[in-house]
Image (cartoon, rainbow, N blue to C red; front, side, top):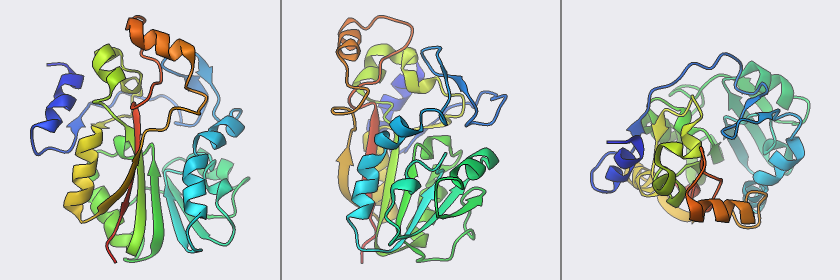
Amino acid sequence: MSVIDRCLELYRGDRYFVSYPARPLQQDYWEAKKDPDGLVRDAAAERDIRKEDVRYIAEYVNGRAPGTILDIGFGLGELLEQIHPDHQCFGLDPSELAVRTAEQWCHADLRHGVLEKKTFAPKSFEVVIANHVIEHVDDPVPFVETIFDILKPGGDFICGTPNFASAAARVFGDRFRLLHDPTHVSLFSDDSLMRLMRDTGFVVESVDYPFFGTRFATLHACEKMLSGSGDVSPAFWGSFVTVTARKPA
């Protein structure tokens, strides 16, 4: 059974994710490296377009009353840079390069490390963001449970991750582009992620599949999806899901 078929099996059982073996990465995650299309990409040089990719999350956070915000896996700080200064922002990332780079752009309290039970006190934050993160976590269930604990009642958890049951995953199978990241080790479907949220105690508030209106929504992507040809899938609607879930007040 292929890994995508195993991810589709998540609809029928009680498992939340499929474990996928990590592959060696010979450099810091944020150094220039090849993308699934074989192009060398430098995230720092693409800061402006990467900021646009996460603007929808920044706008949601900035629409809330001022509070304490935590961005887990903040990368180069493209999201934190856009959060209004009325919020008190914190960031946590396992990459020292990420911390050094983000410090040049953000006024947040940036920390090097990973989320553990005692990293932050219970009920510390109004919003916790983990965008492009949970798929990198070996054991995501206690990760989500810890986020529930550190959120204040009424606080929001914004979680974005690849959807390994998406249309592109089904059409392209092992050629699905989001399988090509060697550090993606926990593979979710949109349904299984929401189920994990609810079973942890969250109430799912919204589900988004950012694509239309983004740089990824191109005629070429649509044509490639229709043909199903090529070594790797295009970016397409449904391939990435963002779930916003609230801790009950």
